[in-house]
Image (cartoon, one colour):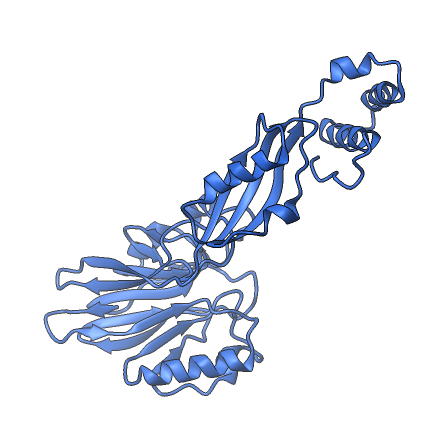
Length: 328
């Protein structure tokens, strides 16, 4: 981040949300990296995963003088010079941290005031995926109401450039399904108080999520052909989710699909895959197979999903394909 309030440009680095699962090697790496940045200031804001406690990385590391850790569970100021103040806060517990604007926080000085913390902007929660908890919740309007020019936030992995706050997102993908440009954010504060953000791509990993429709597939080679067509222009790690309705004779071996790719690593999984059995015809059969279908369809203890799985597994077993029961 850099700022210019009519005088010298001030530049500094901000970090939010490292992680609680660290090794001595990680600690040494961060110490060395931040030391090499000296005298450029580095500011750290502990989050819910890397909360500031007795065993945290923040207390175990021997930081050089250019590193400042925000250790309080309320916003505290650091004067950066040239009329810029950085307000930061840290989590001191893994959960139940109150919002940093609760209680009517307002800045007590003029100039440019910006904030750094780990928190959940309430309007963004529905867009961040299931299971994302509202740690230190806040509303975008609270940023400006508090007299802050802008807030730089950790917690949400999806990048977001809002009017009053920024979520850089994690700089490298952590799991499948994460969207958005993985980058570091360079923010510049102009003399008129406007904030310009530029994203600098830094990700070294490529992670992709793709769905492959198998509807109409009649043999196992066709399954691989459809997967190959979907991933041909991709690199890195690709998770493929299979879906659709396949012919009863099709064998799907996930282990076979995951191997033999030169330009990527592929992880395959079953989504909503069904088998195109003609149940109307089968239930009319006077055979063990027909009786099996009638018995399963009459079992009131089964819901539709489980009934489909039982039918598919049983019919494939009756056909002598006991080792190929992955498609459910």
